[in-house]
Length: 399
Ligand SMILES: Cc1ncc(COP(=O)(O)O)c(C=O)c1O
Image 1: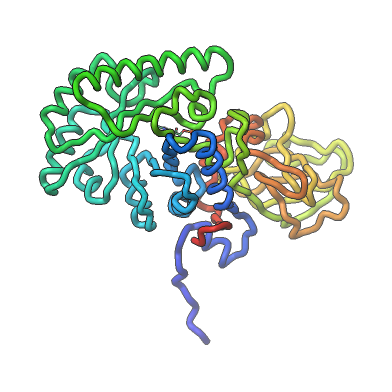
Image 2 (image 1 turned 135 degrees about the horizontal axis):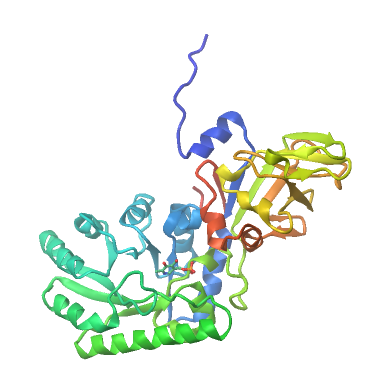
């Protein structure tokens, strides 16, 4: 008898599941769409403004290294931005050569590693300026940093009234070069005058801080403030560089008149079919009872995969696509399964593809739709697709 192969080439938990046991659930990532979206943003901001693609949080759930390489290949970006040092290291291990900005400002003991892997730190603490100066001297090189100004997010950065302390710390750190100065906008995506007024106020505070830095001789090569909403809605926020994330993944469709393509397509397949009599209940708690004879398809994807459990609680049910038609979700979303109504599709059969996010035929379910139904924001939908779901890459960048 042949020895069973116990060791499987592990890449991600979801891939083992799919390759060995055949669960049809997957997230297709269209890397051509990522590159297209980056070029669309670049076309909006023009040659004078650099685009730094935000790929933190595993590129918002899409897979950091393949997305980063697609962005590099797009020709539209100057650099990449992550939140954590370890995210930057993952990109370097994945063969990414572009400049990488670490925006999260948490370095603990990682100052040397940050420089050794050519990651550009954003600093928000005086202690980090000192620590990067020491690390640079140990390595016999200079540290290029971006400093963060808190103009209204109250999250990270030096408050404008503390710019003098920042200048003093920089004067005592001869091996540190301030390559960039940045801030982060809190309200650029808020509709109407409230969002516009708050954003203008932040930009004014930022301009004042930049002027005080310039007066002290700190004149960075890069100044940046804009996330996706800032980039598309507030040209004044573009300065010399922008840091979009959401729009690279096809989100933020309402932010501006830019042709953005969806990137993630979450799909599975029908694995069981049954016919219910009127009054029969579906799923936990009997939240749904069939009002008529109802054909129900079971689909092997649930909240543990990131399909939002809360879609069942909205005023109208979430829908999935089967044979290009919308089918309502019935009852509670389970951890590993969801049941959907296929009564209107008499030829629905086992194996039919089910699309939970993305397009099928002429229909499209966007992250914004799922977010609205589940009381979430678009970002949470793709970030929430769990490790158990294998990512399958399509486009110019083979994994
Ligand atoms: C500092 C910073 N810059 C840029 C971004 C990108 O934002 P968005 O995805 O809205 O474009 C983020 C994301 O939250 C961020 O934290």
